[in-house]
Image (cartoon, rainbow, N blue to C red; front, side):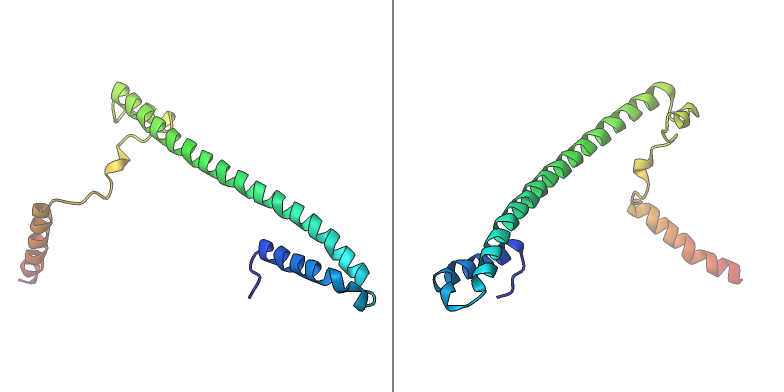
Length: 132
């Protein structure tokens, strides 16, 4: 099994520490390394816990930021609409407020089928007219 997370690594090393402890006397020089690994595991658990707490805090902060951005967008659009309604949609003063002079939300709107058909018919007749 591949250790893909720190939790997996910590558990693997903890199993090594726990299972080797009764038989340490059989392996000369292993006691010092065992003690060192046991201490490092304690520090690693603390560090891993700190990272997980910070990761959770980050998730909450990102969620809060996204919520605030959505609220700001909605309120900003309402404010812009109110200002446009009061001073006219084409007033150059809008630019001074950082607002566009036309409604940008309609860009890229689909054309009705009748308009598309009329344009297609006009395009089909143009080459024939220019060829004569």
